[in-house]
Image 1 (cartoon, one colour):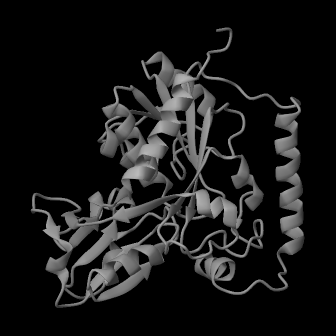
Image 2 (image 1 turned 90 degrees about the vertical axis):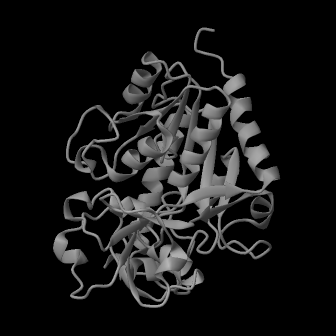
Amino acid sequence: MHHRLLKLWYEEPPGVSVFQPFSWIYGAVVSARRKAYERGWARSYGVGRPVIVVGNLTVGGTGKTPLTIWLANHLRQRGFEVGLVSRGYGRERGGLHTVTADSPWREVGDEPLILHRRTGCMTLVARDRVAAARALAERGAKVILADDGLQHLRMKRDCEIIVVDGTRGLGNGRLLPAGPLRESGSRARAADALVVNGGAEGEPLRGVPPELAAAALRMWLLAAEALPVAGSAQAQPLQAFRGRPVHAVAGIGNPQRFFADLRGRGLEIIEHPFPDHQALSPADLDFGDGLAVLMTEKDAVKCREVAGPRLWYVPVAAAFSEADSRRLLELAIRAIDSFIPAGG
């Protein structure tokens, strides 16, 4: 069902949808909620620190986690103490939880665990992200980065960065469940920056107004090597897996991006897509042969208990042109420098 919906949202031409009445209801609820915050009927709360939100308009992977990692690391290099806050989608424990490098992913979520390991920043997960952000401020964070917080209007923000997949765009342009949109595509106009992940420069971006697409920053996700899921084996260049088929496992929002990247490196792969955030069991990774298994980093954090010598993961890193890198960092620093605490 998950993959059928993705195909319907992103690949098939828009037509009559049995889900459209539900989309109208969903859209009315989203619009009423946003108006309630805009008119002061619902309250947004500051956290005493500048807040930068990285989010997306669509369901599924757009590259926001690699972008958050990039931004956190670059801000730290500029001397800012960064705190990361996330809901921790799919975790089994509620309440406020501190992420450490050894945290079980079921307790903190897969993406927050990656965020902390790749940045070393203080990272808290909680359904109440205002409380989590305030706790980070109390622990010394000077800047709060909120991963996937675009629709969390209860928390005030000083800068919004929206990430769009450069190949899929906004899909068929419809709201859930008839399409992939969490809110109208016009919402992108209110963001401080639009980042397009991948795709060909100059090509129309599906569902995005041309003037917004023209002003967008371009990001690429780069992968160069595979690392063992567990054990002490040395990292291997992706070219080392050429010459025989490999299994490719991806439990992310857009598995095809991972598969296409591996094929672009000259690998012959056997695809195994899974729903986003899905836990993987030994049976899921037992393909009855001795071939290597390459997976995403998001899958790897959930596989340490089932890891074996055949299991490898491929980390990716966000990259920008020098000009776009400078623009994005200047945007974030300007928001930080212009922050005025409540009562200040």
